[in-house]
Length: 185
Image (cartoon, rainbow, N blue to C red; front, side, top):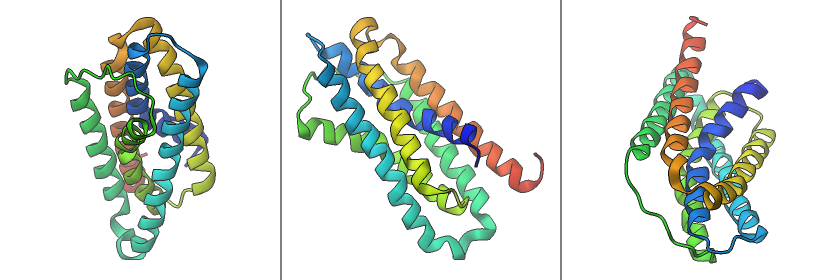
């Protein structure tokens, strides 16, 4: 997997965290740098941890399903992408201004579940996992920290567009993986 492909996946995965960060930024009355840092650390950390867990889970079963791994990657990325597109159309109010451990932990886990499935696909694609998860974590950290600021300045105007874009990106990557393995690309 090329750095460019990994970047596209990282951006796609981070769109949920970005959208939640925009909402958190919208809810903050007085924005401080610690809000941006906390969002980046929670979301970036979990977005890096979950694919690592998924990768190790996928490695355990890789030998059993190598003949269909491209189909699994296609289906998983397609389902995750479709879910994100569906979420982009839902009106969800998220004006909780709390940055306490419990709130942020729940949000970080909720926004990174899809990264667990991507980690499984990384195992099937033999991706170098440590550089990949560090890169995903860094991209998510950056976008989440920026999302707090953007939300504070612009409001929730771009939340659904971010989720829609992330979903489309993941579906495109799933189709690309399938087409490469089928010899179309």
